[in-house]
Length: 259
Image (cartoon, rainbow, N blue to C red; front, top):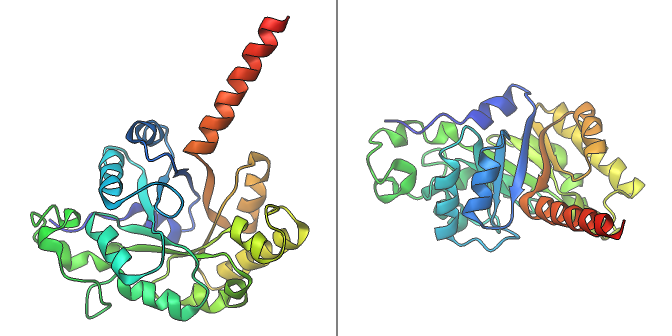
């Protein structure tokens, strides 16, 4: 048995819109609800949520019963972190704070076995190869990696052409929150300067033939991002959706009993 086909990688290469959700609650039950909703992908946020390797593995198992593509955002772009998460079974990764093509190339190498890269050889005992039951896993594991790097500083945007053109990078994701802070507009990703920088970056990413991605919480802007060329679209998180739904429920109840 070979490594499973990476549907997300194929879809992004074909220019197909892929809509997904961030998973920040670290709750298998919440993840199961998201998994059954019909999203194209769901992202296990190892950067800003309370995930350890055991919980990441549990989340991957929950998502494995659904048709959507699981993605893991690692906390930092370091080789040892990449190796650990991939051995847990992640085929699609989002790496934060990639500012240069050199760092992007390092992440590509970290996700591939030699001679194409330097991922450590541990498939025989890793969940990724079903603990050795996928005897042909090594034959095509490199081909099924989907690597998305995150550009979220002015330095990254200055280097966006080279980052996007890096062989082995499938998509470049713009991080509006950190980018707005780096540009001096902390907490205001909708500032005109930030929005213009994002639009320019998306165009440059697309000009070299790579997929562009973003996370945004306002549905009124989704069509605009699609028109810009975004095909990897994050539309919220389990935490923010729960918060807003709970608040709406409470507001409606209080309004009703006051009548």
